[in-house]
Image (cartoon, rainbow, N blue to C red; front, side, top):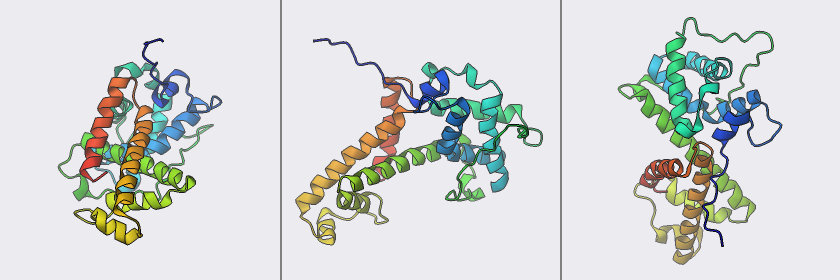
Length: 246
């Protein structure tokens, strides 16, 4: 029996840098980065808003410019996924973007064949000045990055639970983990609320927590280059999530 370690799986980070692919082999570099923009534009927005104190609409424009700049500046070609996590790479790229291109003169030329990125910001609340005052842009990016990963993991858990006929189990998990009650409701109160036994609540919460961590791992796997970074990023994410009751 071979005891060779299993190779670290290809990640979205390495796929994009290696060939501009994102899941489907036919995906072009431009399409790949548009999909990345959809996934990660909120943390980028938060960073730019905190760094430059722009208005909400101007920050949205600058966020779009950043992803277009990533495609046109050649910065991407110098990236090396073995030297850090995708989150760290985005921070470096943002600083370079903001340093090199002052807001008044940095608008990307969107003429010709350029397509404007259709960022879905319908559910993105404006960051008020009070929310960013005194905070480092890096910390705001980290907070929004974490929120994005956790929300996607929770959404995938919800969808899979529904597909498997376990929507009621996710409902218990949501009530205990994502509710507004502080402290969270007791197992006994959840059992009474959902008409199940306390044993059911215990088993379901154990199962859903494990699945939630698995979904988080899948999300994080797409943004790191090796197993050590995966472990570090998961500790960073799960430490915050567990403080919130997950």
